[in-house]
Length: 516
Image 1 (cartoon, rainbow, N blue to C red):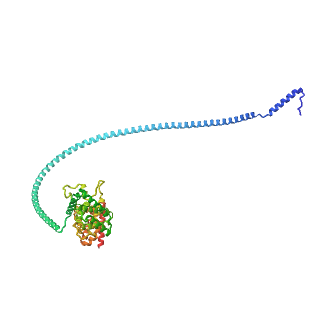
Image 2 (image 1 turned 90 degrees about the vertical axis):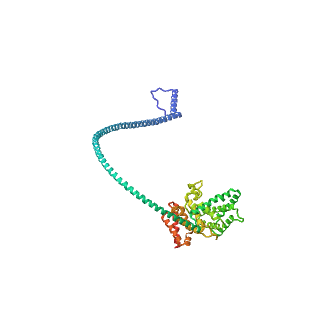
């Protein structure tokens, strides 16, 4: 329906009406048209406004935060600065107070020192006056004492002169009387000494004749004999066989056969007899060796036996029994082996094989032994690597002497009588010499650790057998030895000696308990 026309408005013609309608239609079309660009532009503008508002809000927030942090930092700085200034002011005030206190203390010290110095001068003046007065009084006192002393000295000098004169007269009289008595006593002493010397010479002559008649020797004579034979052995047969190439070759070949046979020895009769026969065959074959080889071969045999005793017997006492039986068999069948073995025994164990005191010089030299020479003669096995330790020496000598005592008292051997050093009674002689002072003079010999070990070995080997053989007399010997043990002399104070002394004591007690 068309709107009513305004009567006041002039009527339009068709062209205007159409133009108006077209205009209205264009406007209507324009208003109803949706342009994408305009939509995008509007959307972009809205998003830009929203982003701008967000950035503005964040910027304002950051600004406010920065301003707040700056305000806090500034406030903290001002606070610390104020505290530092306050501390500096307080420190300055404290330093000033301390300075004032030190100044005040220094003034007090100076005042006190001044007071002390003043009073010291006052007291010093007083003391000086007192000392001056005392010195004057002391001078006067000394003068009076000097006068009195001179008077007393004159009086004493006079009395002393009188007493000296009387004493000289008395002394002269006593000296004359003493000289007369001394001359008389010396004359009587000379007469007594002459009688004692004559009696001693007579006794010694009688004892020497008795020993000679019985075939007995002293310990020193046995040592001299064994040592002399050893030197003759070295300078004679041994030197001769080593200087001749053919003899040395033969001797060396035989010597190398001895040691393995000794090492194969076991404690049974078959082995003992076999080794004894083989060694006898080596020393005395048929036909026999030349005389130049026989004695050196006996020396090698003796050395092998003693070395076996030093090594095997030291490790096991049971090894001494077969070795002693073989030795006893050879002593009874090989001529001169007794002398050679004794000489080599003395070479390995020194004077303990006799026993006797070691002399200060050798048998063929007046020069006293030095330390190394004395150790060599006593049988120490020193070398370039060092000296033989005391304990090793004690055990080695004890092992050799155990074999020696078994030869004296043990079973085996042949019917031919042996020489004096290898007879059974030498067992008794050994104890008699040890306890009777033949070793070291008095008790000093038994104070060695070696003596304790040797005596233990001797008692262990044949102590009970000796009691059955010699009865009450042997018990007396054990009693003497037990007294030496109880006195603490046997073995001395070394660890080896103390251990040996205990073993001897236990062995004596065991023997006495067995024969009781």
